[in-house]
Amino acid sequence: MKARRSTILALVLLAVGAALVALAAGQFWASDSLPTPAPGPSAMALPSVTPLPSATHLPLPSATQPPAPSVTLAATATATDRPPSATPEPTPTPAPMLTEPILPPAPTDGTAHLVATASSTPAPRAATAQALPTAQSLLSPRQRLGVGTGARDVDQALVRRLGLGWYLNWGVRPDSYRSPEVTYVPMIRLREGEIVPDGEDLRVAARAMPGALWLVGNEPDVKWQDNVTPDAYAVAYHHVYTLLKEEDPTCQVAIGGISQPTPLRLRYLERILAAYEREYGEPMPVDVWNVHNFVLREERDSWGVDIPPGMDEDAGRLYEIADHDDLEIFRQQIVDFRRWMVAQGQQDKPLIVTEYGILMPAEYGFPEEQVEAFMLATFEFFRTAADPELGYPADGYRLVQRWCWYSLYDPRYPTGNLLDPEAGTLTPLGSAFAKYASSLE
Image (cartoon, rainbow, N blue to C red; front, side, top):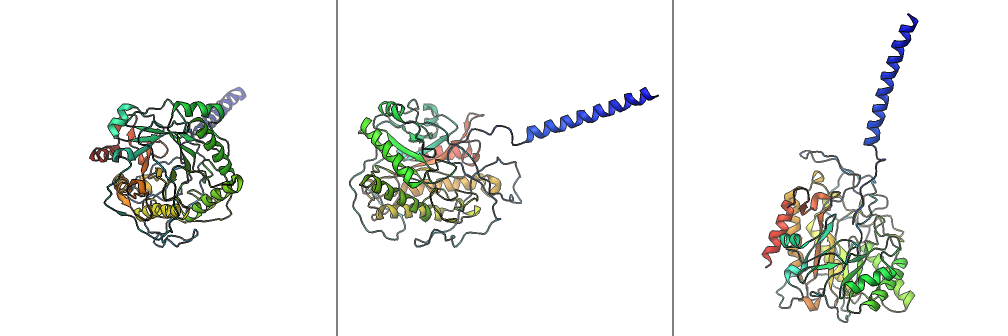
């Protein structure tokens, strides 16, 4: 009898143990201890929000990107001002998104390079950009239209399907596709002050891509990106600029794009310029000005783009999720950046926008048709906006010479994807991009 009871007890214990093992295994596979996907460009913390009642709730990645704004920023607003028409949304909780950028791209061929001339110093003024009849055009419409590749390479077939004129891949890759019709723009990463690539590797790349336009850094103002203080950026930029010009005097060098041209981040740029002049006794040489144009929250340890490294403020523009695709804010930021360029004596320099788009998922209030409308409206703004007191004189006083949509394909931020790699087809947004490009011919 005792032996029988012992046998039954042993079987019960064995069953319980098996159940516990199965439960533990399930928890492991569902845990955050698994390897995270390779980080990509422009990643930042996303707010935690309650999906709209009509939206299907889907599991979101640990980090996703922002929504769209809907207000016009006053030219005199301070960095801590909240846009007057920003709609209160659920208070976001910090969810820092540690995402490294996609590595090395390569410069472009010699097609229609932006030519910078000596700059004058006209007085800045409050102005609203408008479409002006422009007889002079530095680039063709197709040459202006670009894309960030995300996690996908570009080839001739894809270029023809989309109709783009230039692209970047957040790295330096001389083997990247380029042709007389398509320009490849390489980006040197700084990564908290470490220059990648540097030395002989960078010299070899410069020789392989003569006449290229080089971007020095990616969002140095964002702690989840290159994360560089103004003083450190000035030193790194001087080193890279000098090396590239020694190796290829025909190349052009652009400053790394800050995430958004808000008052807080314009002060960050001013500190870079001041640090450069202090260190080297001359103004910082910038052939082409470069900026990103997202609309994201600026608050320490919150979602969005946080506070630039080396700055003491705790808040800047307190954008909400509903502000992410606000066209008035979007346009105003570009006008404000051009006004800032004029104040720095830089009106006679080209301006490119190397990254922008919709990072927030549909369930945050950004359905497919709304994203398409935003994309096409921004394309038309970039194509036509001009102002004789703010724009680039060599390009019919247009405010922006080239722009770059984010992105071709990024599984972490799929809202703006132009390509479905599994099906091998363009997404509806990609088809809208291609249709717009074909209309420019």
